[in-house]
Length: 370
Ligand SMILES: Nc1ncnc2c1ncn2[C@@H]1O[C@H](COP(=O)(O)OP(=O)(O)OP(=O)(O)O)[C@@H](O)[C@H]1O
Ligand SMILES: [Mg+2]
Image (cartoon, rainbow, N blue to C red; front, side, top):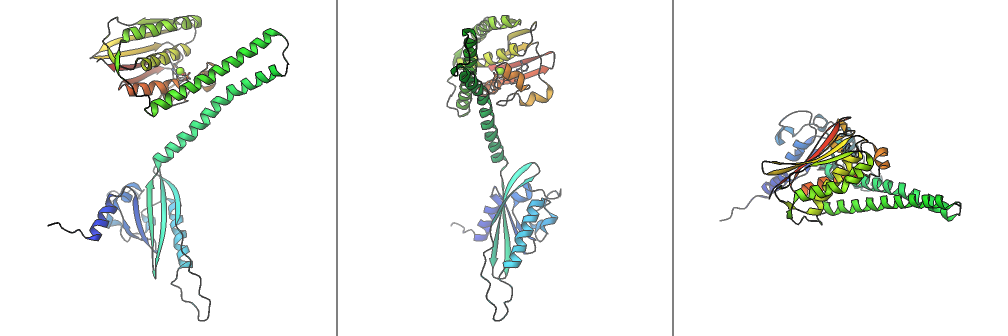
């Protein structure tokens, strides 16, 4: 025979399992009820192991130190004492209009996290209770900030080449340039900036497809020996023009890996491009592959400018560049490594970087042989 659960038992279970905090206060800001979530998440004054029962009857200010929250609660309780229906009305005086105390919603920061707190006053005749609902919105805020930064970054990156294109084309249209050589030079500048814009948009589209998983990796057998050698060859001329020695140490018969050839090639292209870009004339870049415990480790080793320790954790972020002005001069938008990271994640590979400023940098990734 099914056992009927009591209503209060069910309500208790619901509030215990809620992924948001519930706090009920009386008219003197004393706790009538606190659910386990709020006990865990709000900054109770460093008292460990407070229980639901242990906080009952305690003043809110003895448990929570957040000044914004305390001030809001105080204001709501003061509001109640001026608008509540409990005051005696003088005989003959006009009945004060019943004012519904209002809900209040605020955001607070506590212990490095953000919470939204909704205060709901409940007037029941003489009784007044204040319900506080608390939600952790840290992740939402983080995503909001990323979105904001992203739009700001893209706009900024597009504005620079657009301003150049506009400036040079206007000068040409105004007929301000007489000789053909200068006109051609202006057109070359316009072309360079247009190329830069289209590269930026290509990279953004690649990233957004990788992130939205639209570009699901269709695994096919990939011959890494061939991929690494041919990619290295395609950078030969570029390295030579820059006065950087590029060499490869790639065994001929590396086991086949399972992955997306074009994407893996993009990883190697982006890493080699960086290595050559951030290595001054006279330096060297080595593309190396080794077999380690059934996995293939690919390293791009350069003797370039290196990456300061403080910047290391951020270099895989979109648009992050150690030296913005320098990277932009070199035609970079700071998306290369973000793309590398996504592709490696899609291949369940590992990605590593070691660097000493002024000495050089080694980026490496490993892929399981199939
Ligand atoms: N081999 C390297 N040596 C020194 N610094 C590097 C190296 N690789 C990357 N970096 C640093 O990391 C930053 C991010 O690299 P990423 O490839 O994402 O962007 P980028 O090269 O500036 O632009 P893009 O790749 O979009 O053209 C670079 O701006 C640079 O500061
Ligand atoms: Mg790059």
